[in-house]
Length: 473
Ligand code: NAD
Image 1 (cartoon, helix red, strand yellow):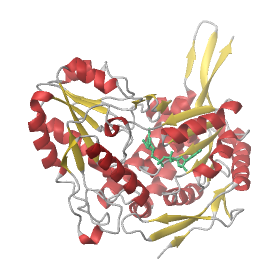
Image 2 (cartoon, helix red, strand yellow; image 1 turned 180 degrees about the vertical axis):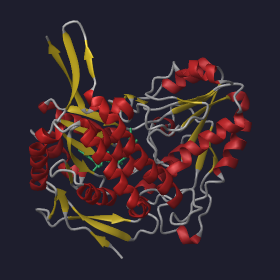
Image 3 (cartoon, helix red, strand yellow; image 1 turned 120 degrees about the vertical axis):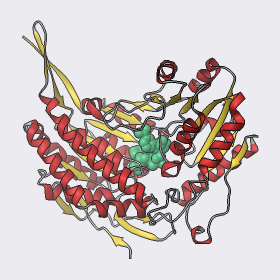
């Protein structure tokens, strides 16, 4: 049965929107309508920003301990309603149940709690000869998220915003709005003061400019495509707002000569195939010694065969559909482009079970002999597609790794950690995963070059939501 959400969460209340327009949320596993949510217009935006502005003076002046306790109470509420959150993510973006549980929801709850403990840093001061520095909240923040890790990205913005003492307007992606509406209810039950958090479900392309240029907004934190990120920055520029952009990536992964190939290649395949390849920091360009190409291809194809697409509701499914049929068409187009430009497909295109034919599925696909001028090596595909690229020398590998407009993430698997750390220092990217390391929500995350500005997560993430004040004595 379709879930019909009728209201927006503004100023501590559920409010009917000013327009009748609705957003249809389609389940990509079968093409069926999963939910409808209101499509907020500029009057709703005005109301939300007005509420956030009015709430800011009191909220930002609350003791850090009070905000930390509230963040933990929200995390308790998320834990209690974990099944609803998981359900929303499975049905709106097709994420497999086990992954939705562990990574998308439980990981987000744990990360939210980590911002409760970071809140104490808002009391830190730094004393110098005749001045003291301190941190204060930026103000009213617009938090715009994409659909690929909808709850985790929300937490990566809302956690530090609340910890810092900012007030917020949440704008989820139109494909995945439901977890934000559940969270609004959790926030309400937790007793967060009216106006501190407001949730607007809306079409970004329609209202984005209005939202990001609004005179009463102090900061916009955006995660999504580079194209929309540029538009956000342009809209925010005349008002000189703080803009944090977490954008796309085409991240390199260097496997150095002498590395444990079985472990290194399996790690690389998993990194790309998880979440059906819809991970902004996925290590999609695997650079391998040319002399090892054949062995790498064999290990990679074998590892990819474990990622057979299946019904996301089943616990054993590792790969669900892509998040929409539009995304499926986009990824298939890139695969055709790869074939046309001469890349060698070593797996992909396998027939799907009949039961999956209505879904937005794409089989795990690996290309080898990819050169860095090919479209599939330059553009973000955002699907389960890995490019294997042979190199002759490590210098050449580093040059290929850096030959990209992006700089979000990277990886190195060396013969040992010391060698991998040394290679990592030459790569222009915000993160580098060494010897098969895993994502850590305490580590700063963000891009060089066209992958963005600013950092999320951990203490750096908290500081994005602060101004520095100096008291000169
Ligand atoms: P998208 O840019 O189309 O949409 C992202 C969000 O921006 C949505 O909420 C959308 O409604 C909104 N939006 C769209 N146009 C807007 C505008 N003009 N003004 C304001 N908001 C607007 O991206 P997507 O297709 O949903 O997400 C995929 C992209 O996100 C990929 O490029 C991926 O790399 C990137 N991403 C980056 C990170 C990161 O942390 N760097 C994380 C996840 C996804």
